[in-house]
Length: 186
Image 1 (cartoon, rainbow, N blue to C red):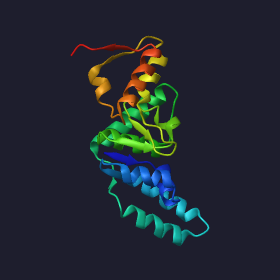
Image 2: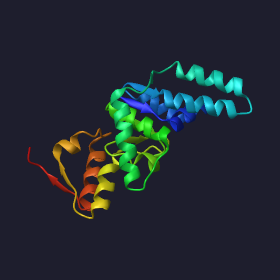
Image 3: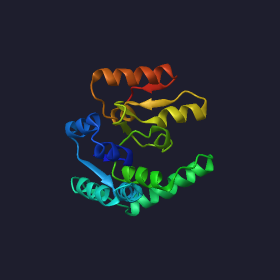
Image 4: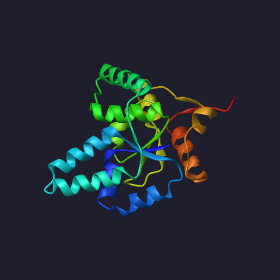
């Protein structure tokens, strides 16, 4: 499942051809969150034409399901927020909630906001605005914080979807170049 972040939804509402094409080409189930919906309605209310923008948001939201909080995502939110605060890397609650919902649904977050979401351990993100493939920044950030080689299993690597074989090779090369050690034993 792909969950659209607020910035991706805004780009669709602005008729960004690349983002719209990406959504059309996605074979996976696509949804958004009610947190994103609230942010979209907030943006509409602040615009010069609030009624017209709110109608566009309503029409857009009718095209995909909105996911909300459940007990699992609420627990994830609490753990993520505490972990980030402990290392002095706070994040806005809206972003934390969206990330927690993605993790609870084992979903990939489609966003252009890599800087915020890369802090969330285990969250896989896909940049639909700039067109990057897929990244799970947790591995890279973990290695930086540990200042030690990162050890990955084939299971860790196989959990990430790749666009094609070249993308997988690029990902593996970047890991090895960064000092990661890949354990091929199963």
